[in-house]
Image (cartoon, rainbow, N blue to C red; front, side, top):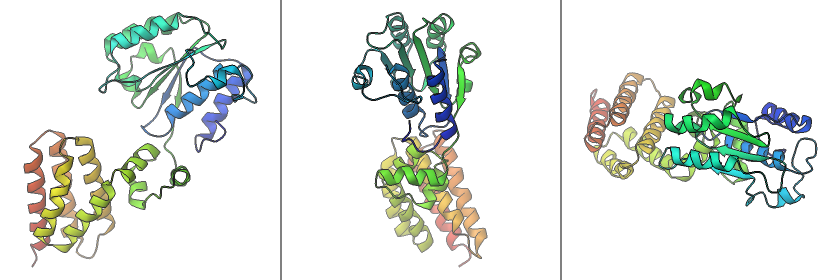
Length: 299
């Protein structure tokens, strides 16, 4: 945990829990996606399972630490197709009843816990109500309102804040990634989102779209539109691209800002239409034509 960037107060609190040996049976790590909740949960789990923690942090030398990546004392449950299914939760609950093999404790991490439906949450509830003393369950969620109050009441909730721009840059530098200011503005303090936007080529497309719009050329706009339509199958990607485009266009307001504001309004309208499953290609065709019309209306 000592090498993690950001969330200093949370990390110090978790280290204090290890040092005091007052480990609760259930925690909820809550905050937006991509800010390090899962990373810190695994580091916390490793410290919980460590046979000889030092100053609240795992020693990285004991048998538990050396076998951490494969130990049966750690169970991680991930969502499948965007959902944590009831059968997976029931299997985890059966695993909870099996005693640890190396450590004195067992840790169960449920990532994206807010994707559990009512049957899955009901299945988990009994384990939260009567957990074995050796068990610690860590729920990770971006939207805790999706979890039942009976589950929330049995967890120690730890709320994660967004990372600062300086922290985002520091983390990105570790991976040799330079974050553009527009991405920093848009990612909302999520390093996961910032890196994804940088690596997947969205930003290059956004710059191409911006240049095409600024050129006032319908041919250039249609050329950029062809590239944009390649993201047809993933609505979240289109949402990111259009929001980044809005961000960049908003920063380039000139004396002719009325035209730019109308163009941004058109993009926002189309983005909402796509979210509502209005025809994808027709919506983008409409967007480009309307932006071009606004750009040439005063000529």
